[in-house]
Length: 250
Image 1 (spheres, rainbow, N blue to C red):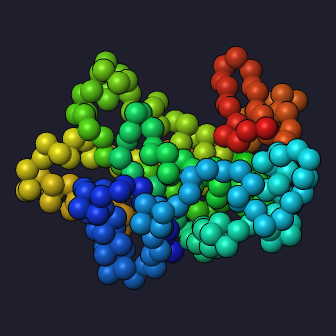
Image 2: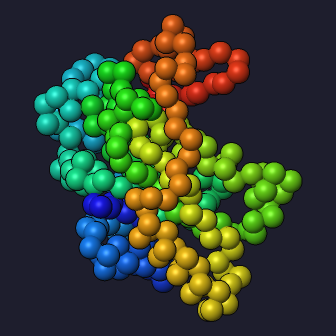
């Protein structure tokens, strides 16, 4: 495998950082290649606007998708984004490593997605879900949460974690075509003693080394939906039984 780890935690001594170091060490020891985008260390700018581009498609009015499509056709992304696009194109597996903050990923990681998952780079022209540009590759969210597993259950204070992660797993990763591996979650690492933390890291080592065969979430097929309800460039509306919201703004 060629694994890209996108890491989002500001503290090098954090448990998230220990997980990224463990993943890189174990994957390389098993003969896989690894690249890491450590977003805080890179001082990655999460704001997505005209600063993404060296080209200009329309100087009178800003449309993110119009500018992304033009930049994809004319090598118009900034060097910073072109480097991230190259890493993503190189990879056969993607890992998002992050702490759950306010029931979501840190803003810097969401900004990485907003800027890097551009039209023409990860989706576009009817290529989504099983026809997505990332088909044949795997992606996994590896995360820590501050509470216990009971707190993130159907009857817990925050609700079922799989539902909370659905916008990332389905609306982002599955949408662009990844085979989405079941998330790896460490609950309340701050409450664990050193032996328990070591056990969690060992459990994670086994998961990343077995990433190629780890269970994946049920895939979504494009033909599950009535294409007559699809609005382009992308706004997906389906019947009352199931609704999917596009992960990109119009």
